[in-house]
Length: 345
Image (cartoon, rainbow, N blue to C red; front, side, top):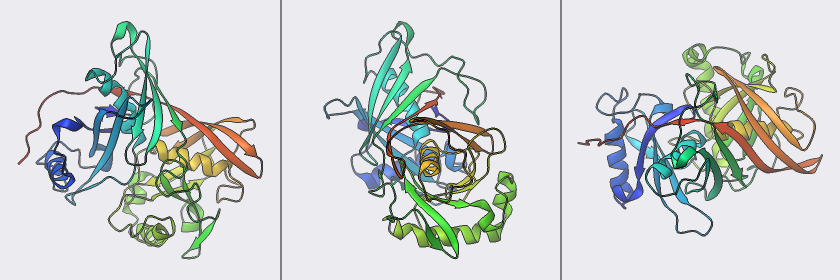
């Protein structure tokens, strides 16, 4: 299934081994263990080497449990540390298609527990006449065409991986003489000003990926800041994501170039966008003076990225000097691509 701007395999948990090592061996074999993933169904890119494992939930007021697994391209391993909000968008349709959740007319609410972090999200899926509809007019930048909208309402995702919204306890840390804001509002992200690393932040993905000295310096900062974010040694982890920000150019509120963690993202991840948008509204972060922050308790921020923009709605409470994000809402789309069997060696 495609979920948002990502694509991957969706499994029912009962169809995979309970032993995590054996499960991961199967996932790597299914996607392909090599760099090109020529011997599997992966797309040789982090955005197309993802897995969602879904099962009915035993928790009260929760419909399904969702475990996200990133099959790391070319490394033959699986990382279940982070969430993936793009793949999450397709969990609702998948659960309905598989009979885990009964469809209602015209819309079905699917409450999902994200096992990677324990947080909850409510997905609103279009189900006219009790069937999932994938056709509609909703547009997601970075995805061709249009599709039925899926509304994702995230409930209490602050500190989902690192334990607190500001994992280091500060709005700004200094690493390698560069100011960094470390934030976790659903995804651990290190936010940096692009200009502080000698770039504009408006370069193409290809230009940034080809800039080996820049990427070496960015990775050095990532490895040093990871332990400070309560993530331990992040050498073999896909978090924290590194997001470089600059002033918006296309009518949005902030411009981004995000690394996941070593390749420049074609767009920006769902929860990564949430964390960056949250950094924009907090006082004293690296986004202060760069981000254009709208007024009001409900703030819709447009996060610009290489292939367009991503709109995030933040319901904000608390005091101006210490704002509190109460709820996060955003729009995604999804599509069922195939059903079948994958053969693993």
